[in-house]
Image 1 (cartoon, helix red, strand yellow):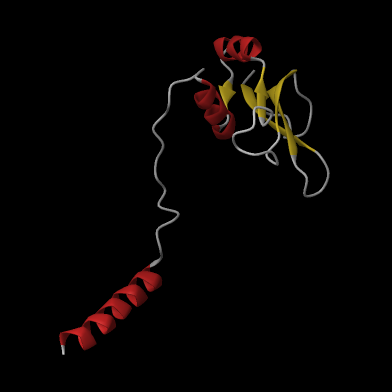
Image 2: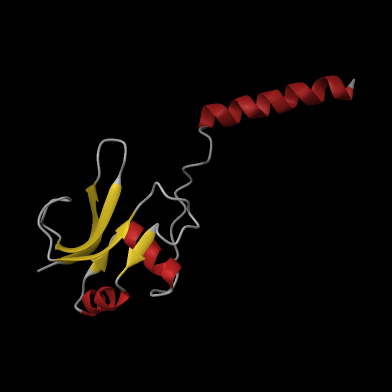
Length: 117
């Protein structure tokens, strides 16, 4: 059985609240899970102690059993020190597209032209 440690969404519309659960990877996101391992409340401030709460003993148990954390849960575990920081591929999402780059080059060239005169 392929196990995952992942988020299960709760809360009302536009007020998300997540449970961190150990679940079979074939189950739906908010479906059946085996054990609740913690909570995550994204509405709280990033430096709040209440934002992420994990039962580290149980998380360590499930990791030892071969459960794979999702990316977001892996980041929580890295922040708590339970896992070493992993290298992530920079997908260049923040880099502007080709047209935006071309416009920026034209604008820069236009700004230099009057300065050169």
